[in-house]
Image (cartoon, rainbow, N blue to C red; front, side, top):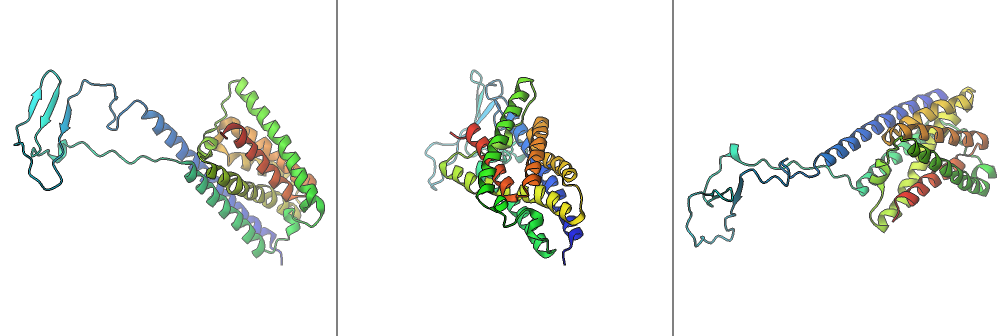
Length: 299
């Protein structure tokens, strides 16, 4: 027996978790960028690298091969002209006066970012599919039917064309934002951009497809198709709420990115409602992301 209400409750829980994780990721990226910028022009201990006014302690390392040094230990001497203090090998430095060890810094690599996105999106997709199976939601409610427009070549070609049109519109919106002085935060895309050919293959062949499948399953199929089929709710009304949630999930792209993503999500929802095809919007979503990375980050 189909349990529409139970599936909707689970879907809303998944949505809340996704939005919370997206907010935490945004905070982590902002903290990482702030720490990275604050350390420019500074040494490990926090002092400017071009500041030579302080007294520098030069410690000669003792020999580690077990042999005894040929030269005897001498008392610390100070060169007043150079402002340097030399300490003998056997001179003991109290713990309170020792230089603290530098803290380990967080380094976000493209591989780390891609792994995080792939795992997160993969889990979301598995949870939605598992919930649909457990609560016996028909595939047709997701937009998966045997009609050619939904799963055949028309859906594939239509998705490619639809994605290309949306990518052009997305590029135009961001350029308009640049002209009027609004900032479009590109940190997430830059952090995901690989540094090797194998990294690009991983991005285009695994990460971006997972993003497209997972987000369309959740924001279009589970939040629009299933409630519309199970509760006879207007899909256009559901599209508004789904697109708002889709925009909030991309908060790391800044205010302009949220607005543009929300509009993009609504247009994808419109394509899903009109065609009834999940495959079409998955392909369109992938095309948008792939072209964005290819035109802005690929080298």
